[in-house]
Length: 488
Ligand code: GLN
Image (cartoon, rainbow, N blue to C red):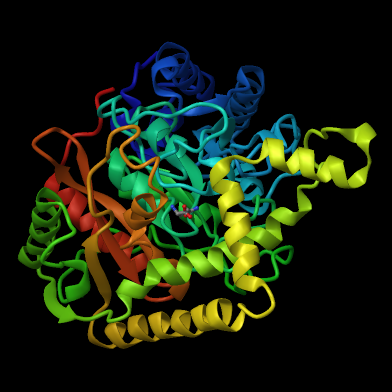
């Protein structure tokens, strides 16, 4: 059997090894499982792993291959899922005690696509409770560390999905991005993470946080693998009323066509005098230069409402969260406390005890901004600013094909560094949040390491439904830089 370094093996390469008979899906899956068994005690990327279920999916894939019925590039490839994806007959808790023991009754939209593509889906990956956070420290179960340096956080909220991929525990994973939760952990863990355009991937069967901002997307160690997963999960789903009426994406086709003639916009607001770590700024600028050397043209653009994005987001996202999380009342989902004391005490006790502090803070904030007398000042006002942020992007995209900047203002921070100051934590999404407000697409691709050896991601933002262009530019950068993957 071929022993692989999973971190540095792309899905395409693994598929070739499978097709050429050098390895079986069962062996690939065993390698992922044994990496988890030996290393995840230190890392904490997975909340649970169903070994038997994974191996039975792998055996089914091997059987298809023997019979000449392989389903395509993901058949037999082990992938992980953030703990907010419904995955039939498996637990799904969204990192919360409130959903402890909840078993998914069906597969969500993206999960179903992956299953149909033959992927081996195993394990629930750690995340901040209800996807609220930027460090994974708000998981109600356990922390997840950064595989590049265990004293540092992996980012969040999809911290487990990023860390597990960086550590070679699976070939890719799914996460969700409401304000940066795919791109920021991808940046901090040195992997590729894509937030598709709002509506491009079905949200059906994903635990909702803020429904007008949530979007599903992939993580992988390289751009081609990320594009492979994206193509598989994208496409219209009638069960998600906001799903765009488009066929599956075909970004793999033009992935390697280079950046010659591509106009790359550098927004001045993403390169401020202060507020961005110096090493981050220098790595991001040199990435832009690398693409220029490969034939792209750099142009100055502006996103003038960037400074308002975080405030706007924390009004709209909390309002939607307060509404979405109202359903967790101890009646239909998860554990029920103080049942014998009557309905009202049961609601209070269940929600009061089982929601974590950050979730409660958001529910309170959300109800406040929606309350009579305040809704005009906050909620309605934020909707207006949201429109201006969208207009900024559309104007900038008249001048360029994509926008480039830092994903996160800093590399991975240490545990505890921001966890007591919510505002500081919120500011770690300053460069990612506006994309969600505009509904456009964005990705983070590794740009280099700091002197301390922590990864720094480069963010590329695209026009609506133009994931192809940002993936193509990310591929060109990846090929030019040829960086090492994590050696954890
Ligand atoms: N960190 C942001 C928050 O806490 C974004 C989260 C996300 O994208 N799910 O809300």
